[in-house]
Structure formats: C-alpha cells, structure tokens
Picture 1 (cartoon, rainbow, N blue to C red):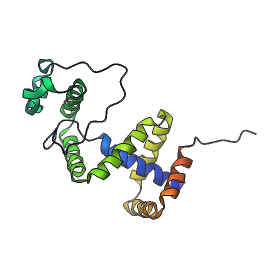
Picture 2: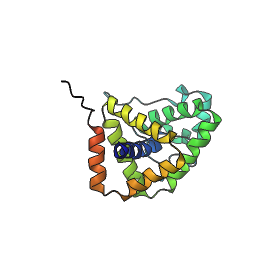
Picture 3: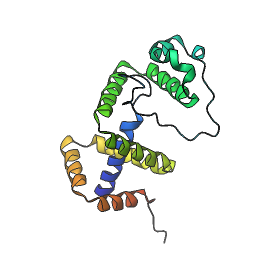
Picture 4: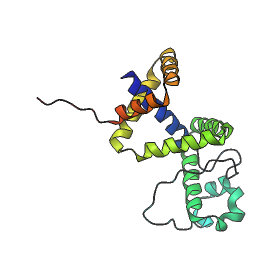
Length: 180
C-alpha cells in the first residue's frame, strides 16, 4: 500500500505541477522558456479567436500579444484566452501560488520540463477512475505529517526505475475483490 501511495503521489505531484501552471500570465509569457500549454486532443481544429472577442481584462492581461495576435495559430490563441480566463477567476492567493509554480517551472532544466510534460500526458491518458484514485492517494499523501511524507519520498528515491514502474503498474490495476 505504501509503495502504491508513493507511486501515485509521485505521479500526481508531477502532473499537478504542470497542470496548475497558467497558460498566459506570469513572467514573460510566450517567451522561449515558457511552457507550451497542454492541449487536449480536439475533435475539430480550433477556430481563430478575434482579439475584440475577449474581455477588456483579458486584453489587458495579454496586451503583449496584441500586435501579433492575428499571426498566432488558432490553438495558441484559444490556449491564451482560456489561460487568461482561468487567471482572472483566481483569488490573489491562487495567483501567488501559480506564479511560484511558474517560477519553479522556468528554473527547471528543459529535460526535467519534458519529463513532467510526459508524466502529465500519462496521467491524462489514464481512465477517469484511475485518475480519481491517483488524486485520492495524493490527497492522503498531503494530509500526512511532514516527517512521514519525507520518509516516503526517501523510499521513492531509493527505488530503482524498475521498482517504481512495477509499483505504478500495481497501483494502476483496479482492485480485485474475490467473490466466493
């Protein structure tokens, strides 16, 4: 159980770090170092978004894109618009937290950023029930005393990649109940 919890918590930590990074706000949005927004596969290609279709608050937030807005790909326009809507809906505390995570993201080496993107994609590819189990495990992990979390992290770091992989596979398998 501890190993499964560790695996789930590790996967969710990575996934949540990437998931909560705002698409548009933060220092130097759209710069070469900023993360590409995670996009879900769409049934139809995104339609271009007119600058005038956004609220004045969104336009103010994305003012650095105004001159080049029409030359951006429609997918990027949509991602920026969604990100600005999310940003504007956040509380000041949520914004502060998002800015801290964004700064952490930008400080990561590109290889680590890529690894986290891959883990996020793996999480998003999970069936909803499995995603829910990972979230529940992560929440249990967060509620543990700091000393216990540190111990679990230490155990995780000491595991070989193969041990981690087996642990993830075991935790990903639905619980089987014997029916006799």
